[in-house]
Image (cartoon, rainbow, N blue to C red; front, side, top):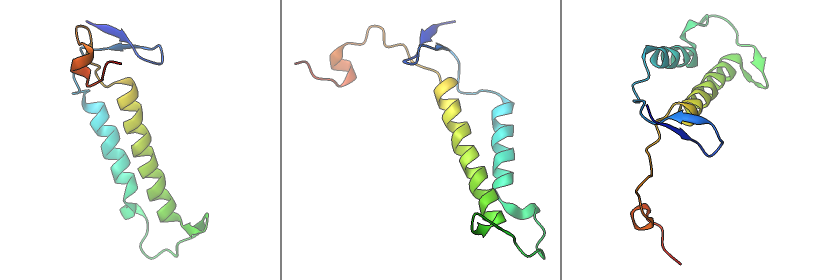
Length: 96
């Protein structure tokens, strides 16, 4: 197993594959199900939350949760490739 420190000083496994397991896909499925308000009663008069119908606030909250979960996955679980042996020409940078 190859461990590399990230820019934040955390240790990250650089050999992990992006196939994280079923739990990631179950979380995404649950968040997407919550983002579509099919489970709310159709005949109910929508109450207003923050000046919007409550189903809009629930949908926006679920979308925000999806974005935060994705960000967390990328920052903490995404595999990092080792840059050892890569020169400045290979990175696209220019020498002064």
